[in-house]
Picture (cartoon, chains in turn brown, orange):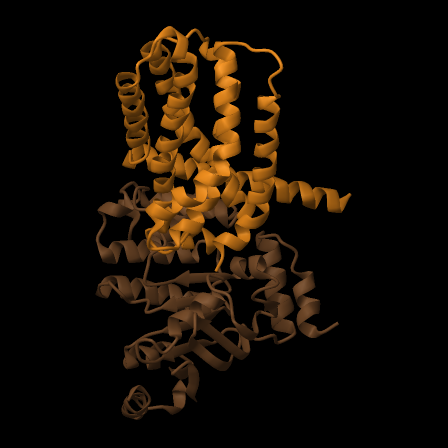
Length: 264
Length: 232
């Protein structure tokens, strides 16, 4: 039995805190990457979007994914979030196959995308309670209140999402994504719509997330942000990873120059 | 023993999730009022128009009235139920639910129950109006099993195909084209059964059994294929 299968088989479909902890311990002990992608391809109709992607994100690390519009960043994140199916290749999250173990993968992934994935006619609290049921979160009400407080929305819990501003909705989307304490956060341009205060609150949450040993894969067009938040910088162009470098070895000007070359 | 407990826990989670999605849809509808009002008004208008346009004498009432009733239900259902999935479609086809570790059968079952509830509310309003307008010799209580089983079959098919149609541009046109051929057996059974309740006749086929058989077949198929339909 392969290492991946052995760990995957041990991940029984449950979402209690005990299981989350044991999953974390097991995968950390075996040094299984948070994300491991080999030869991933994806097409929409005849149009190839991802061509032979190879990518590894170690546990507890943060990777910034850069690239021009249409490079395939969002598609890659949607595949990892279980919203799109890979065309070919193998994609694993903590050793779990993204297709075969899709439901288990969804339990350990949190996704903040362009869309907030919230229901406009429900209040902020109702939305979080609903998603708490979907993820089978224990003490969902307490957790929802705590997260709404952490994202600075404690005074808006009873307001319908449809009546809130873009930035406020984005904050609640963050709370939704963190509700089930995901081991891997996928962030598609996560700062969109956030004001300075919101961005700082989210930064604090992200710092806690990585302190716990959890991983983050995020896309952004802000190079400073990529250097600030990422441990590794990857660039996508034409559906391929064309550049990868440790953020600590990069200066902003170097990154800017490289980005210009890739985007061009 | 442990396996039994795990199955029990999974079943419990399944029904909690069904309940949560249903609760969310009902609350959503109560606030947006997009579906019920439109469906209800449409069903009543169809009944009123049919009542005016047909020459309803005692001898042809039994032939015409059941058809009018079921046409009202079917058109109102098609109009309203395609809207119930519109709320999910606002941000990508069902992405908000598909992101969650929810059994896709739970999503289907919840959507079906929600749709049944929406149609049932419309029918509760429309049935007394139908009896009054068409002056038909029928007790609503007798009609309830037929309406319930016929509606279940129609909702089963519309729920599945509205997800398929949702991914296309011509969804409003495509949905009736996909649904109408499939619901023909149920509609025939329901109309004939309604006629029999108004004017009992001998040697009629077991229409209610036919409706039940189609309900079981369509429900089983829909539950099995929904995952493949709803996911990319």
